[in-house]
Amino acid sequence: MRIDVVTLFPDFMRQCAAVGVVGRAQQRELLQVQTWNPRDYATDNYRTVDGRTCGGGPGMVMLIEPLRKTLEAMREAAPKPVHLIYLSPQGARLTQGRVEALAEMPRIALLCGRYEGVDERLLAHEVDEELSIGDYVLSGGELGAAVIIDAVGRLQEGALNDAQSAEQDSFSNGLLDCPHYAKPVHDALGDVPEVLLSGDHAAIRRWRLKQSLGRTWLRRPDLLAQRALDKESRALLDEFRREHAQ
Ligand SMILES: CN1CCN(C(=O)c2nonc2N)CC1
Image (tube, rainbow, N blue to C red; front, side, top):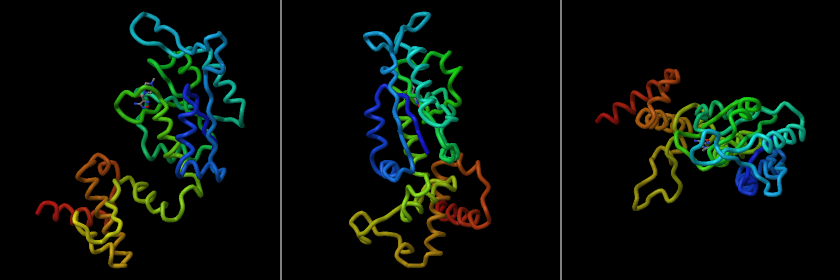
């Protein structure tokens, strides 16, 4: 998979994509992250990429022309089609389901705005999708792009080793993750739950599922409302609720 990133801070984006699972995915050529800096496509001596907001008011807006040239070069640099995503608070909230869909695409591009944002005419003409990583305002789209690169990159076949793929399964079912413990088994802060030391993998699986269901019920009931529970999950959640009520 190839991810192109249009950003005024290419070094930052390259560093984000160079570490951990995503860095390894790039080394294994499972993923390619390529940056594009609109300043390289600005035609004036000051490499201007922003302009005053029409209608007055604070802040600057990213100019059409440097971005148009940047996107043209980006699109031509590798086989099409490329799905262009603009990061903004006005976008649809990013979910794991959307991440999984993006991870199946051969090529996506991430447009990172700065200042007050990008000229709306450029967005209307070029962008396929707007996505938000949350209901708050950041200084730019780069952190949102880093989130997408990580969440999508780790899903590339071969990016996660066997131990990590279990972690991936625990959330891909739409539930919050269960608690995790490492040695020492006994600590001043408490003990590791006995079931995790039992070697009974079926019991451990049920315990982890019960904890995920219970945590989701307690912390994010909205996620539960979105999914049907099978018989086993309904029974485990009822058990958790009864224990929690005591
Ligand atoms: C122009 N710039 C404004 C700030 N911004 C965000 O707050 C954001 N991006 O993705 N999710 C978000 N929330 C990115 C775009």
